[in-house]
Length: 129
Image 1 (cartoon, rainbow, N blue to C red):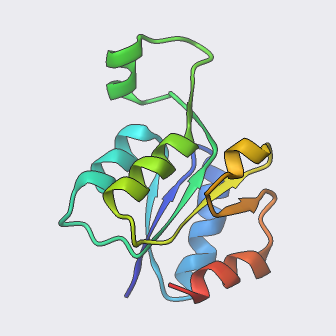
Image 2: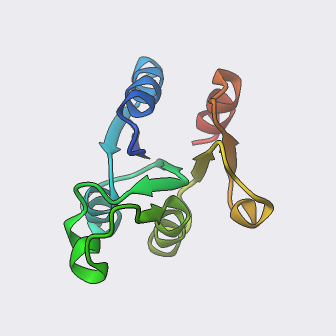
Image 3: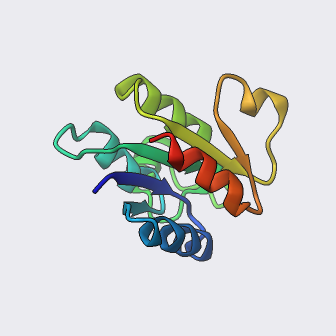
């Protein structure tokens, strides 16, 4: 069974996408923030065959970022940063950025899928894993 890392701070989006992927036979490693995702990204014992990253993540529950930057009420951690971290650590693993707000700069050199998610696009992405 192949493992897919899914990082999205919105529980409803995470659960819907997780359900779609699990029905297709994938195991989903769901994360809601930087702390949870970075543990998986840097742990070489965890096999990841593909990844999805939400573009904008809240800092809620993110102790490591709070330690580094302080607790700011409206601070957002960019999923693009996690995407780029992932590609540095696991360059041959396909990943996709998810967003309803993406700019051309955000899409630059990154696989991108717009929200709301379209089942056909999800299927096209996972077919190549």
